[in-house]
Length: 122
Image (tube, rainbow, N blue to C red; front, side):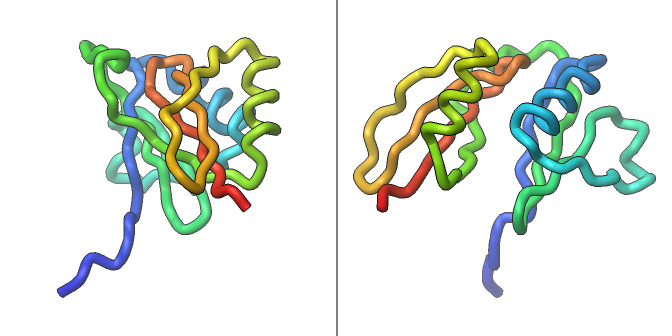
């Protein structure tokens, strides 16, 4: 019996902010929305696909997303392109602690979720 990979990760956004979140995740970060199973559609939120993994965006109130180190890390092939794109949109960029073999930075999405952008050095 072996764990063979990560199927999905879930982040949360405040209830009632789905359209704003779709704009950010689908338009700014260029992720693709996929249909949630019918049995889960009444719970709010939406699902995204990225390579061989999904990102589930659920809704949740009463949670301080700024008080946690929990985060997603998106691996990219051009960190500087993403840093420039997000900066131009007014997203506050924060430097990350260096990790050998990688370049990376962090930001908070419009809902307070911590997001990391990481690129393997060539």
